Image (cartoon, rainbow, N blue to C red; front, side, top):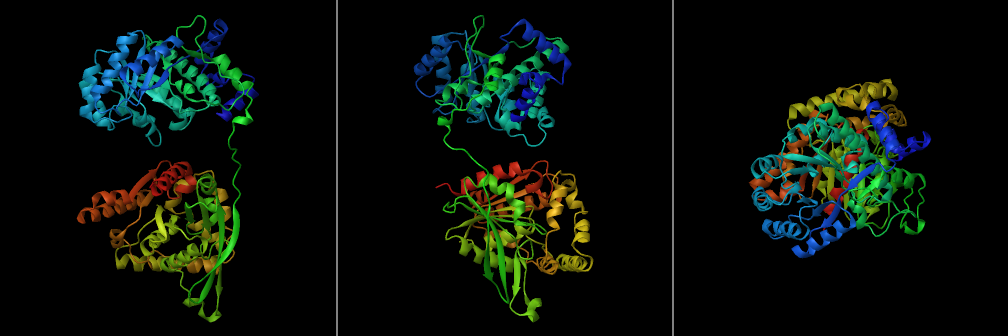
Length: 608
């Protein structure tokens, strides 16, 4: 939104002109309309909570109609004791207000298929414009369209499409689905929203742009975007030579729910002198943004980028001490503590973007693992270097000592690749200090002895290669592997490789590579049945190998639960997500979905 407004400001034009600029047909149409009608704009749907008695809701609708609204959406439909009670509300509105307005109902997937059918049979004659998301599953949704005869709109079904949404929309072409509700802030921005809207128009469905309780700053941009979507619909209607479905009222009625706003001036939402319903002018929306003044008195908190605090802690192991470089952000008194563990060749800096994203709501800590970055291995006796053990188990033990130094409470461990193997070892070893774990592109190890011996030899050879040919040559060889295909195509790849060249002690690094080999690690597959704390398993969409490992981990954990007649508990303990448009290095290639998943995981862990 900021970038689009900046472009409009630089070119001294409206944001809607930036949106239509790439399409000459749309641009010419918009210019003609602006010249002919200075009040070019969009219609707005009111939003009403359907709580209350049927008469109370009907009177509230009457008030909205008197204000000038021609379309009203009822929220919280589906939360009464029975569908019959929800239907009674619609019936009362029609009795009091009549049929001069459009009514939309939003069930938010609250009904079973049977309940939705009952509601549909009771309101079939009441001329609903549509019922939004009556059921949760796509199969039941299509069945409802076929058997109820009631028009349906999509909302959450669109929000939940991962990756490229257009290819996945074909399942919703059924003519009973008459509208698509699109929240740009949820579906991935204006480009995705525009593509979804175009798909809807090409399939003769309404495209309704909807807010998610944004301030007037967001709504002013959405108004111009909705105007662009409406013009796109008019153009497609002409090209396909069919009549438009008429004026679409967009879902910006949320503005009435906010008692405060961030700006000193008001965004004009009103019934125009010659208009036929509540709406907003594109010119007014443009002027609002152009002359925007933030009201500082209404700003409760201003967020500035979190600065990371760096320090070192010494942890003693057998025959050596581990001086840990620690990076930390967030409130040190917060009882939500997250420990990040990087992969081989990584450092604590790999987690900086995620730490800054999570630090407002949690105490976040990242470390340089032994042999990496600025951490040091201090030998007590030069002759005992070969006795130092840096296996996954020994590193897990060191980190548990570190946790005890850092906090008296529990910690959520987030590990990537080698760090994920350490995190799994920790949650299985000492789960009284670990409240949960997030395993990104990790594995419980190799099941068979032959596979472990083979992998031990491979990693020992790699460690010797590192010592013989140096870090630069090793990095080039390491990242040439198939596992890094998508990472090599990522714009951050070159800068990531530069950070990998900063390891100063390749002797320690080569020892970590050999000692922490997955071949030397005990297989933890059988130990998954002893899992007692929640685990979130993450894999990249393009990382076929580790996606299969993640699926097997979840499947086997749940199978153990079924055998122990505790299926529900194990279902809740083990959760898996696949992050779209990413390979092995999920946290680098597509961090935003991972941040969202981590936030949800932390909230779930700390629910009473």
